[in-house]
Length: 361
Image: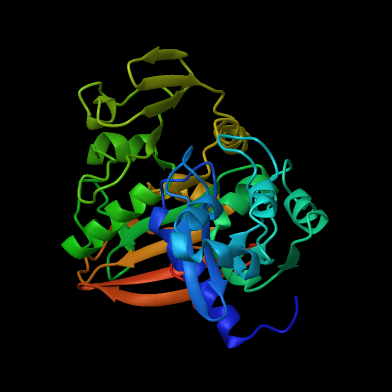
C-alpha cells in the first residue's frame, strides 16, 4: 500500500461508516461501503443493505447523478473489501467496475472467500483499472471480524457476554433470577442481539431465568436461539419454545423439527462445542453470542473458543453466590459506563483481529 494521505483516510473511513449502517443484515455476506470520488468531491456512495441486494459498488454507481456520469472514468472508488469476482446472489462487482471504466479502486481488505480471494483484484488490473489494496487494513478487518473469522477459522465469531455484581457474582446460590444490570444495559444487549446471527445459553439458565432470548427492546432481526439441553429438561411452556424466533435445542434424545423449533441430536462429549461450531459454520452462522450460564461460559473459555468478551458489572453487591467466570488470555479493549453499570470489553489475546480503537464494536 502506498503512503496514505489524509484524504484517503477520510474517504475510507466514510466507507466504514456506510458499511455499518447494515450491521446485522448482510450475513452471511460482509459489511461493505463504497465511495466514488472525483478530485476531492464525492460523486457517489453506497453500501450493501442486506443479503441478496445489490452490493455496495453497484449502489455507489447507481447514486451518481446524471450530470456526473461522465466523471466516473476519471474517478477513484474507495471500497473496504475487494470487489467480488463470482456470481452469487448478484453478478460480479469487479466486472461492473471495469465496464464502467472506473479509473482507480482503493481497497482496505482482500476478500478471504475462496471464490474471490484476489480474483477481484486481478479482474480490475487486467481490465485496466489502477488498483491499490491495504488502506486501513486493520480497521477493515476489525469491522468485518465475523466474516473474516468465519472464513479463516471455519467457525462463527464467538462473543462471550455476562453480567456480574459489584462483588463478582453472576447469580445467587439458589440460581434465582436476579436483574444485575440497568435498563440502559438491557437495551444495549438487545441491540447487540440484532447484530449477531445466533445466541446461546445452557440448560440451567434456560430453566431458571426462562429467558426469551429475543431483541424485543430494539428494532431488528431476531437471532437464532440455541439451547444446550442434554436431557430435554427445559419445559415446553418456557419462552424458548415460543414462535418468536427460530430455535435449536441441542440434546442427546431426539432429532425433530416442529415449527421453528429444531431439536438437534448431538453427543454431549468433550467434542460437543467444536462439533456444534462446525455445524453452525455449515449453516452459515457467522457469529455466536454466548450469554450464560457460568458453566457454559467457562467451557468456552477453557477451550479457548472465544474471540471477544463483553462483561457488565452492576452497582450492587450480594455478598455470596455463583462466582462469575474468569477470563483467560484476555487483552483489554475498552471500558465505558452504561447507566450505573460498567462495561468491559476484551479480545482474545491470540485473536487475529485485535481491537482498533478508532472503530466501534
